[in-house]
Length: 218
Image 1 (cartoon, rainbow, N blue to C red):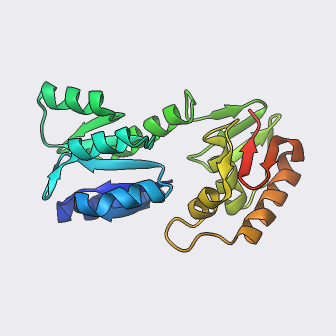
Image 2: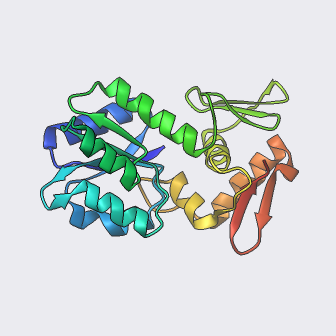
């Protein structure tokens, strides 16, 4: 999981990154709205944590611009404001959830996982796609009840495809998600991982859409 954080408070931003890292979640941290739009659109984050009060504007305005541009990224608003009107404005503007400062990091991580489950159309921590079962938190998967022996890369690839079963995920998006903190994975390496994953879960489960990417059959 790779998260975009937009928060100007240095102490909180650092604490967020450390807490997420301890839970196996990578993140990019920005402190201004001016730095956000291009990155948010161009990089395949799994979710955004967006503060309402930022030095160069309102996170609510950025949220509305993102949603107006068609950005479907799950977004959790971070705020020190507990007023109902603020929360309603955020939810009506397209936020998926709110968390009010001060908050426990464990609660934030739980809310992140809940938002991502909803975006992946999964009702519990155990993801089910036909006879394929995936447990993201324990990095385990089963097929017809039998445990799958997957490498970390193969599991990561399967998880990214499973977020949107039945939907084509572009090669470029997959390649970037496989290496969220560095250069995108080389396409030839990506194809090797796809081939290995097909061998373990069944070639028919991962469909190639030529010139676009891959799709996990629902």
